[in-house]
Image 1 (cartoon, rainbow, N blue to C red):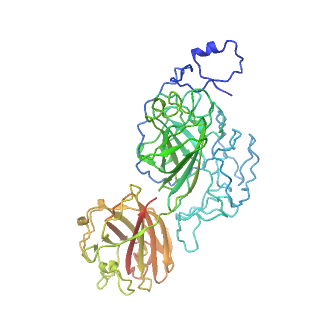
Image 2 (cartoon, one colour):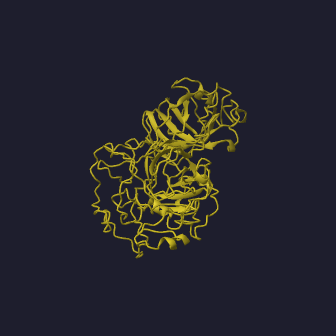
Image 3 (cartoon, one colour):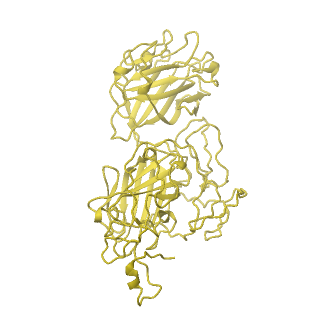
Amino acid sequence: MRRTIKSPLALVALVGIAACAPPPAPADSGDAGRPADVASDTQSPTDTNVGADAPAPTDTGVEDAATPADSGVEPMDSGVAPEDTGVQPTDTGVAPTDTGVAPTDTGVAPADTGVPPMDSGVGPTDSGIDARTDSGVGPTDSGIDTGIDVRTDSGVDTGVDVRTDTGVDTGVMMPDSGLPPGAIGLTNATADFSQSGFSVAEMVNGIPTGDNDGWAITGGGTARTAVFETSVDTTNYSGGTDLTFNIAMNSTLGGGPYLLGRFRFSVTTADRAMFADGLANGGNLGAPAIWSVARVVSATATNGATLAAQSDQSVLLGTRSSTSVYTVRIRTPFTRITGVKLETLTHPSLMNNGPGTSNSGNFIVTEMTMTEAAAPIPATASVAFGAPPSACAASLSQTGYPVTAAIDGALTPTAGWAIDTGSTNAQTAVFETLTNTPAYGGVGSRLVVTLHQLFGNNHTIGRFRLSVTNANRAMFADGLNNGGNLGPAMIWTPVDVRAVAATTGAATFAPQSDGSIRATSVSVTATYQVTVTTPLEGITGVRLETLTDPLLPTSGPGNTTTGNYVLTEVQLASGPQI
């Protein structure tokens, strides 16, 4: 059904015009000769959340709901869950019957025409099952997060985290015959304001065409914001996430063009209950602290329009066209993303300051879709630790095996830091970097910490945790092997473990909820390589905590029968997080 916007002028326009006359464009009060907005289309206050880019907490939950059909009518809830046959139910609306078998994966991505495909307007029946999971069964909970998303050869995402034979988290999505990462649905559209008849929900309803379909805001030079839930968490990639948005603006109504003039994307990993309540006006946009502004990698437009990324990671339209499809690629260190925020922003180069390009600053976003991909992993460079003994300290060192030996630059198997003084307990060592790690422009740091344990006889660390600091070096590391200055707890920042592997020897690694890593089934010697990320830059020190664990011999923290270990050498490399 086509919609009109009421106006006193409409009564004059109806004289002598057939009932099937086309409706006017969404109201633009600045468009000369165009109908005014209805009284209900008053503007809500400006979104005060604009620009927030604090990191979001990790959301470990997965929302197992496919995008419901946008029929305008709520489905009847019988209160009884459908029988789980392992096959997606037949969609009797329009879509063909889902046999539960994914199409053959040719390994070749379809051609990108720059325009979203036509859609019947009827979404698939919501079975309550994760759209990418074919069996209807959630992932097996082994208690171990390996960070690997493995798809079967058929191209169907089984939803099960699978470890390699060694139990090592490679942090890399396993190949599936060349199939690129698929689309991620955007659901529960929410906005601070929507023009009457042009709800924010229409920009994710699967209909990429139509003059009167899409999200509009009346205009008036006011920034507006929309937020969306992802239908499933994005993949836990080792190097962060690239998201690509196709934003179609296909309205040809008078007073246009109705393009976005300036906009910005942010992401969150917060629990979906914290944002997006589905309201088109005055909706829950989430607290500013849960959103992180994403970096723009590229921005292009069809039909001759031009886009340029700005220093605040917004995108500004230059040359405009009557209609266009924007393709915007953003990059974020976050994975398992649960939501996306789109801010439409004002700018003096736009009519009425925007945020759109119509005569009054309005826009009509007909449709927006999103796909995910692994962000490339940046290169790292070696970072030297300071010279011992002053550049390190330990809570305890075994006689003949001081912590200073762990940063002496020598891979001598018979030397290193050990802790057996008749009994073994959790111990801590801190190490200063010789110079601050580089500043990467605010994107954060990617660190690779290598722990060489070459003594033999299972003298390897069984459980450990890493943290970093950019505090003044005078606050920690006094060169003492026993009772050394480890620095106040407040200066140390936990890191986010991205991957861990045994580069020599073998081990099974199990990341723990407290940020530590348990290493079991370790060979007599081993070298652990741990990749971590942190928002900190200019890092001055690394802290290594070796921890006890009931699953280790005599509770550890080492893997010998006495709980001891010998850390031969620790090494560090640093690079940008994304």
